[in-house]
Amino acid sequence: MDLGAIPLYDHHAHALFRESTWRQAPLEPYFGEANDPEQHRRFGRDTLAFRRGMHELARFYECAPNADAVLEARARVGYADLARRMFAQARIGHWLIDDGLWTDLLMSVAECAALIPDVPVRRIVRLEVELARMIEEHDRASSLLTAFAERLSKPTPGVAAFKSIAAYRTGLDIGRPTAADVEHAFSEIRRSIVPGRPPRLASKPLIDAMLWAVLPMAAASGTPVQFHTGFGDPDLDLRLANPLHLRPLFESEALRGLRIVCLHCYPYVREAGYLASVYPGAYVDLGLTIPYASAHAMRTALHEAMHLAPITKVLLSTDAQRTPETFWLAARWGRRVLGDALEATIRDGDLSADEAAGAASRILFDNAAELYA
Ligand SMILES: [Zn+2]
Image (cartoon, rainbow, N blue to C red; front, side, top):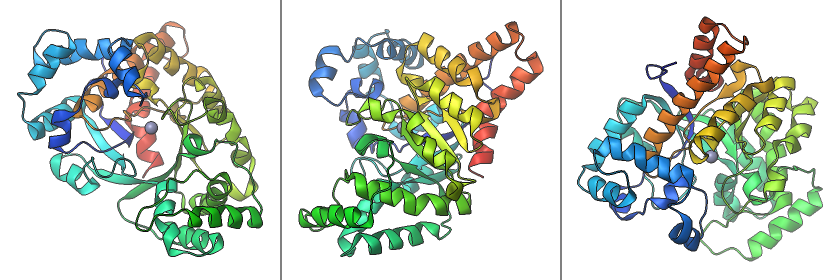
């Protein structure tokens, strides 16, 4: 199946580097989640994703298929022109940007919209980062959380969804801390705060309480909430990033109607697919697994997501950031492995050819378009 004509609704992505940063940035960090410079220096060019990336980029830049040739070729291109060409070839139809990351190095949402004027752009609010920015204005956790939920409950044009990075900070086993525990945790954060600099929030009582303040409001307003699950930034404990920890949220009567998108998922793709098969509010997205895994693993992940999950609840995204090349590569590979996975469903008798074509449109575009309408 050739899915090149179907646009991608990229509901899980980030912003691009400003040009000066892009020109100096090395290639290795674009192909994995390590942040230890030694890992990049000694092993960064040895992953299957990196090697595959060089083969593909060499075709784009018309150079030899190795990192040095790619670096040399891309140094000669104009940045804005490259970004527009790569977004057009990747057929990115919508671009939802989580702008709570590396704010000093990446373009703002408005700058991204101006750079790629054909693609509609909206924001994803990174909850823990947004909350950290408000801590200084409050003396008590109760007033902070009330003000935070109130602020998020106001309809804001340009905001498509919320996102939680609880998996990175304190784990997905979201508890029910007592008010006293939350106030105690808050006062400790306040004591160590540097004026004008929002803290890196890693307090389990505060993050869990924040989620219980925000999620009922998101359920009521119909705002989808993305959760990072499985692998991701290396500050996470992978054992606590299993999406099965989210079961109490799906079981909660108070959160009836809440739609949660499990992002990344690897290696817990089957677990996320299971959740999507039993809870109406659970969705599976494979951004980051695509493009960081081997081609075989990307194809397997798509199969695994569809083992149980309805095809109307499986999504693709790029989770791309920093360089237009990550959007281009992730979109190409996403379509390619989706085509392979759907061909297998035709061979196996799961879907007819027409149904598989419909599933491709749903997974690349329509599922997200409905979810973030
Ligand atoms: Zn992500």
